[in-house]
Length: 256
Image (cartoon, rainbow, N blue to C red; front, side, top):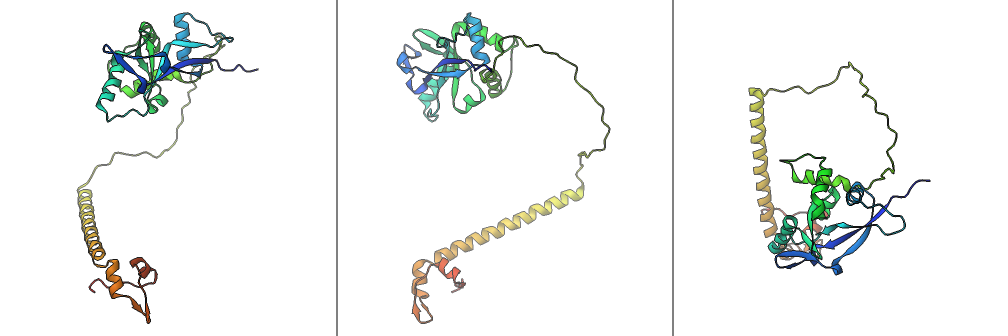
């Protein structure tokens, strides 16, 4: 019988409820919403670092972290953006305990969610996530996605499985294949390309003339003009729009 994934209960706070006092950003207990989340490496790592064990008989919470939801934040509001930047740089307080910005997965980037970790645990957690390496220069979104891999829902093994590691299988293959060779531009290519540019310019000029003519026709042949000048057809008085004349296979000469 397969084991069900462990469920951890993680708190979430909405950025619109954040408050500020004495230069510090904070949330109250009334702002907290708790959701169950399937096990992943981050939850398991936090439990290991703080010396906790998962208990199937109780609700397993993680007070050492929370998720900040900022979806729908008005990016055109300078005060709102400045407050969010302050939360990232200086952290957020809950009951006097400081939490600092940690990471976000690829899906969390799309939904504008972030993971905040209790300040006293952040450095130790960072060392485990980065495996002791130090990044001096990186693309921020890629670095966050890399760290956020620990948030991927996983089925964690309760013990170390028996694994056999073998060398990579290598085989030499000799076969004719199509390749793309470097191409050197000739003088004739330059002449041909210049001709294409000139023809493109002539097409654009003709299109501009066409648009101007259409504009002139639209200004001339208004509904009132058609009604006053083209109402008698086969002895019957009618009033038609330009599209109706077109459906009947008739049109008005421009010079008229």
